[in-house]
Length: 160
Image (cartoon, rainbow, N blue to C red; front, side, top):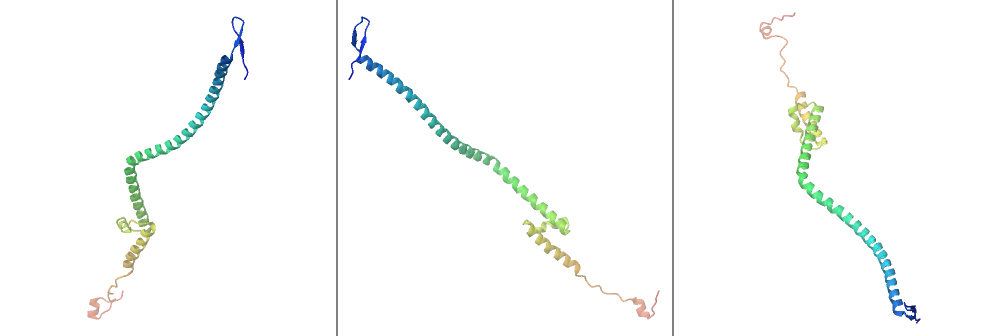
């Protein structure tokens, strides 16, 4: 190993191995510290990016589920009530439309039921057939003779 010397204040050369080692250690420590800081910053950035991505993904789902739970508890009964009312109005509208198409009176629309359009139309066909069947079967009248009872008794026929 090499021996190092340095000039002191009195002008003499003294052995400087300890000073060189201290200088070498301080400089190498400084170099290592700088490299470690850069590596730490790089790794910290990578870790931060990974954690941030994971937190964002998990946080988004967590926030969504919490909000969904909170909102559902508040608005679900209102939504169900509104949907039921809309369904009742839809059925009433379809009944009225079909009753109008078949020429039924407003009080007969209740007999069309609550099913689909096809079900309601099938019932309307049955109702119309039963109502029409009652009208088409005419009760036969007893035909009065073309001659009045008085003419029959007297035997006199009068023609005008």
